[in-house]
Length: 130
Image (cartoon, rainbow, N blue to C red; front, side, top):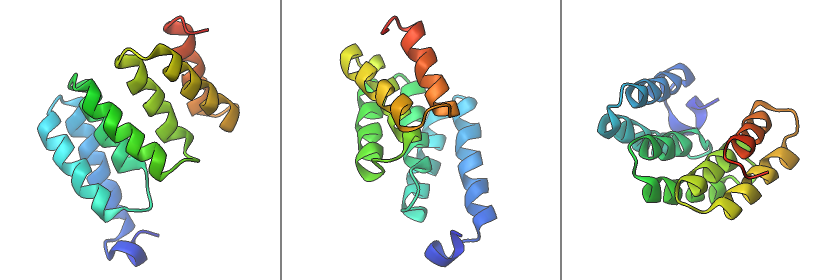
């Protein structure tokens, strides 16, 4: 799928993304951000690298930057419940509970019964946004 758009075999792009997620989980935020930033250019039709970059900034406690990247992901992929879930999460970390709740409720209505919807419901409950 990605090969025809990027020239890079699909397995290689998946490997790059997995490396970014692994680096993020190892708290190697600078390296993870570099990987995800590069993947954004390689995968212009996917929100995954943008969300990966946003969650890297979120875990690095750079909440405002995470919010910026999350918003870009939602603007670029408005029908993505994955992007919207993480945008809602970033809003919450930036002290915007009403806006976070609105985004999380939208995830639930967009994609009921999905893992993203389930996570949105759990965040709403845990954060006391119900």
